[in-house]
Amino acid sequence: MLTVGDTLPEFNLTGVSGKSPDSFAPVTDKSYDGKWKILFFWPKDFTFVCPTEIVGYGELNGDFEDRDAVLLGCSTDTDFVHAAWRTHHEDLGDSPFVWLADEKKELSTALGVLAKDAGVALRATFIVDPDNIIRHVQVNDLNVGRNPHEALRILDALQTDELCPCNWTQGDETL
Image (cartoon, rainbow, N blue to C red):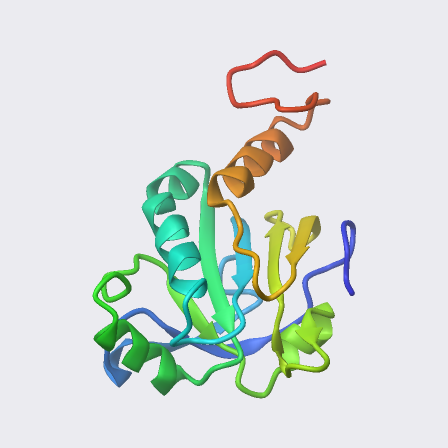
């Protein structure tokens, strides 16, 4: 698995930002150069835990944008499956960030987050700096959802470039 200090691998995937093929566009590792990236994987569309995470990240999209960061969701489903899920799940239709279709499992494999037995991505989160260097990695088992607020807190801490103690939040003193 790639880890802190490694470079985000090159990729060229289809991004889905809506409910129809009109919303499909190529997204590469260079698409958001100069920005922080929160790249988070979920195992499968049309499941139960995944939409809770997608909605949770979506609710914080403006907070991530305020920090010059872009959210990128990703699973090993296709672009058409992403669009269908956005169409048929009322909480997901207006998701404010791009969903990447890693249908060939190239990015999830390159990052080392493909669950070998299940053949889908683990619940992995990567915080990547503007130079495409991985600065944070979190990986959960398939059945355990993440806390998007914690990803935001870690981003805040990383952006201070200071020593941040346990439970530090934005506005607290650094060490």
